[in-house]
Image (tube, rainbow, N blue to C red; front, side):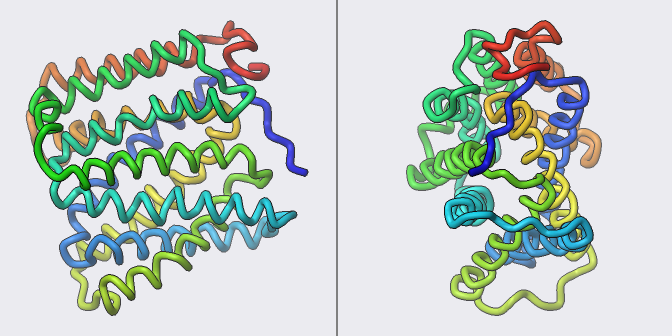
Length: 308
């Protein structure tokens, strides 16, 4: 039977990894905008997951592939792969066809709240505390600032099915995150196996829903797909699995709030959009939430679930 790793207070390295993960995931939206017109949403998901698997596989083989020790572990990993990649990738792509980016970011920003509730109910050492609640409220406040009043007003417009799809994707990520701590496997090899299972599921789905793989792709699309596979899918998933197992999903989920903030920030750097006080205020709120969640080195065991 696998042993669940005890949680600890986030260190500076953990915080840096959370920031890096959020930046990488935010950059994925730029790559997706480049690749999706030619590749299509479902094939884009299949290709990026397949490339992520191909990138991690040599390392996993070199280190010695670790296989699940029981049918229960196989079921957990299979369920985590479906909830972490297959379903949310498809739901987000479908919802993004009709929802504005701000509304989509706002709905995806519900993840930390769902994680706070799910972790409190389903785990013994990642419970709801006043510190965590304040950190989640600060982080969500940052999202509200960066997406603006128009996104809040936009919640009353558009397809109800698309909004439910976005919320469903967020719920999938939370559920998958809670499953990760129940799986006793090194993060890189766990990510590799999950990406392999995700690839095996997404390719048939892409063939059924979108036909043959896209051909004649431009150099920009190929480059975007390679980037998506190596960084937002391969590298970011390793960091995600590592952080969830060490600091808990409630704290890690706060990095989700940084994604829309960094997404706007990348628009400033890459697209030359103006840097606004709104963006600075949003970033300050989200970082304040992360700081509160960390609680410093003096955080109590009752809040961290383990030693620092």
